[in-house]
Image 1 (cartoon, one colour):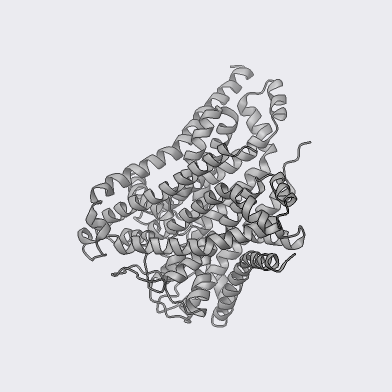
Image 2 (tube, helix red, strand yellow; image 1 turned 45 degrees about the horizontal axis):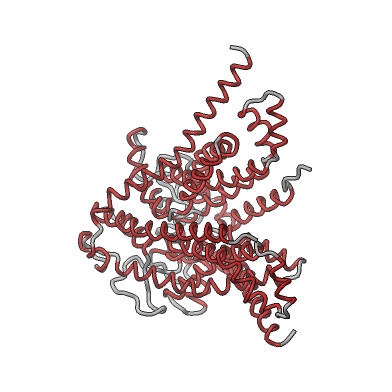
Length: 285
Length: 291
């Protein structure tokens, strides 16, 4: 075999390996979805959504966890969306380029890389103990808000950046103030990108388990939370609880709850992708 | 500027300042509790004792078993993710058609959006039983299975970011290599990968940092038993899973056991902080400049 043939052979060998490598990830994803479907699909019923947790796996349901997840999501959104957008606007439109703005930028990148469980420790000490909010929905949501804040800030900035400066200048030329320009021109024009970022951030928050365990979300909650000061559990923690039990019945429950969690996550991510594509296609500057 | 505009600017400034307060809060909380912890446990024991048993009658406070557990899992994850992720990146940027790239990339990114508790379930109920068929003597809880699953989870971190870096290499460089008679593989490995090496390194560091901070896969599938070993077949515990283990039990506030999670948390924070800043440094210093 001459040199030319050897290098062609190597090239083709790599191509085959690369296709295998690409398939490994996709096959794993398929196996994961199929396995969960086979384990849990038959367990999904109306009762499963409306039953309280129970010691007997066949009677247990996800009502408290589902309601807990909804509470935590809504409250997290209430905190994270205005603060995240506000910080994004500040960095993009107000902060003068200098040490302060580059410090803020480095700080936000660093926060995005902090492991989620560390946010749990922060929430435990600040919200649960120092501010005496207890092991409540409020403590959990505040913790998750801080966790997803960097995602909202970064996507707000990216979205505002894509709005051309001619928009801004036209608005100023008509006599609008800085805030009027941002509120009435920049934000509506950037709304698609900002919304996409918010949905992705919230879908990340829905799947978070570790920080909520640390701030004291409970493994077993036999009642539906009625206010933000109640103790709570969420879907991922309910799943963790069921997976940790030895009885086979609870493993099936875990699979069924995973189907619900995955459906919510996939729907949110799908919505984000559709929104992003529509926004990118419609707006041509 | 009128009054209203000033108030709005002040409010927006506060929003930005919250991110700084968060960082300060994390550092203050971790340091304060850790200092209290070290008033009862010596730093020497913490760093050199080979046992970690704060919840037992005879207490040892050596962080080493948790650190080796974390490193072992991370190592397994990277051994899986690096070759697969990098091959995918090279394939998508240098071999595949635009159409394939457009479909495969978002599909792979789904892997990164799956909640980690779901991966934990997958490791425990699929990967561990499968590995037990191949490896006799593999414990029901072990480091290998969650390590492999975590490796699959971080593949898109490496493949996506590396692919972006490879894609950004100017085609003139690659075309010069082709003109000299190189195959796609030679062009990829000897021209594109070296030119994109800083971007690839950043992607690997971020993936490592993500693996170190990952909690639920390990909490579910690795057994929560601190053990100073590099044997991937036996149960171990990582820094993150210890924090979860203590948090889900009944440890009284303000006790020494309670403070151990902050000392463990600070160790974790320092490791990931260093890694993240190395990646920023590389990104800044070697920002691809070709002209």
